[in-house]
Structures are given as C-alpha cells and as structure tokens.
Length: 207
Image (tube, rainbow, N blue to C red; front, top):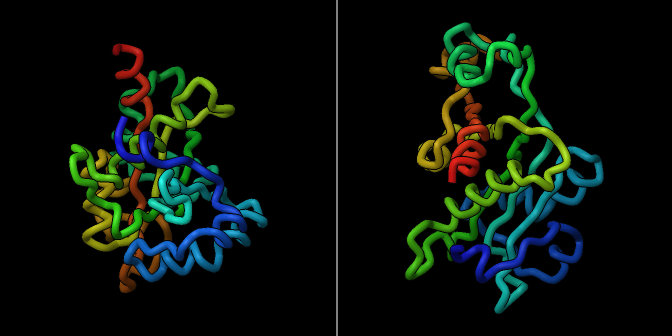
C-alpha cells in the first residue's frame, strides 16, 4: 500500500501529539510555526481539524501532518472560461452556483521522510492520495466534490500540487487578483488550486 499506510498510523493532531512527539519540521517556517503553536487553537475554534501520520516504530516522529475544513467553490465568482472548465463534467441538470469542497488548510511532510528508500512514490504523493481517497470513501459523512488548497505562491508547493493533478482555479495571478478583489500591485502570497474528486471516484467504479 505504500510507506504511509504500511509503516505509519493516522492520529488526530492534539495536545498528546504536541506533548509526546518530537518537534515537526517540514522545512517551512510558517508551517512549522502553525503545527507547533497554532494547531490546537485552530481546532478549538472549529476552524479545521488536523491529523498526522506518526511512525509505528517510533511514535514520537511525525511523518506528515495536514489540516482540513469545509469549503466550497462558488462558480458565480469565477470568470466564464474558468467556470466552464471547473464544471465541464458535471451534468447540466446538476449544475449549481456553489459546489461542496474540502479545504487543505495546512500540509507538511517531515523533511527527513520525503523520500523513502525502495518506495516508488514520494511520501508527499502518498499523503495526497490518501486525502483524496478519504473523501470519496463510502463512509464519508458528507458530500464533497472538490479538494481545494490555498497553496503558498512558491515554486516548490505549486509544483507539488500540480504534479498531483491539482489545477489553478484562476488562469493567472492577475486574474486571481481581479476576481478576489486584491490590489493588482500586491504580490499574491498564495494561489487557489483544486482537484475534482469525481475523476478519482469514477476510476474506482470502473476498476
């Protein structure tokens, strides 16, 4: 099944994790600070729920962590061309102004566990594959058509999500600024990206 599912255990990222695990280092200052200092308050305020995979042979090691929360894609807030792209495989009679989504608010992979010897897939890809499968599972208690992420507007995270089949919700930074009401002179710190879960769900049904 892969390193994550075979050698790690999924846990809720709570005060016990903070108390008993070594500091999590994904080599990104902002993410490290969130998982060390903000994660519990974020959960207490019901803004999102955070999970992590810990190493079975040493549960003090956090291999990766991620935060998810409810969100939506509002097609009425998109340019016409982007709207058509997002809903192109949704039957016309089921088309709406807003579609349920899950937001990956934070995601990080321990810098020492990104590449595991003998593994075909990198740990980061295994993590996103797990999250995708999680939300098309029959036991999932709510409908969720898309996964969205507010990726850091940096080469590595943008490339990471693109390699895992996420697409930009907007075609350019200029378009994103225009339709989200941001100052055109300011640099975007994040870029909105999405993944259509129906693609994975249909492949599971065919398989």
